[in-house]
Amino acid sequence: MKRIKIAVGTASEQKIGYLQEVLVSLGVEAEILATEVESGISIQPLTSDETQKGSKNRAQQAFKKYPKADFAIGIEVGYELNKEDDYEIFCWVTILGKNGFEISARSHSFVLPEFHQKILKKNLFLSDYVREYFKVSNDPIIQQIAEDIRGRRPFIVSALRIALIYYLKKEEF
Image (spheres, rainbow, N blue to C red):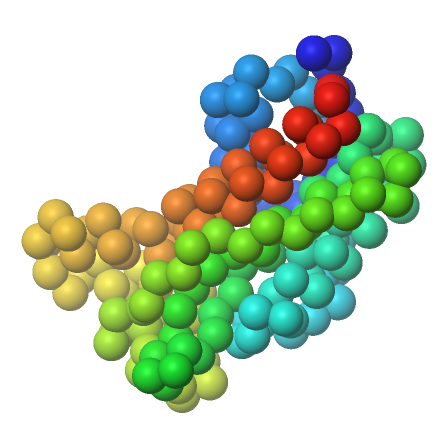
């Protein structure tokens, strides 16, 4: 596989790190062309559709900035009420190829603990409070949940892996 150039619609070192992690696990050598872009959606998306739209908008903006890239990626984390009226966290990743090919992949969902439910149901920004959940308990499971929600790693990595495997196999890079 040749070394590829990927335009990414984020300046988040954390998201770029997760992308690098997935690329290494897939044996892909890539130059990542990261750029800060606007998602075109609310700061805290509260539906799957809005979150997916944000990932697509980010990929489109990245491609505009780096049109010579092999493809572009947009990553967006969001929340949505489930049938039980509880918020779940998840991630959408969209990949746009030069030839007009597009794929969006959604990660698994995770029902947020009551601590986070209360914040979202008060229309507050969850990111302002995620570190507070670490203080709830020293229990290793609570600490892992706190880290997963704060860093969003399992959701971002999952969606990236799904989208990249599909795209790279389809395009035969």
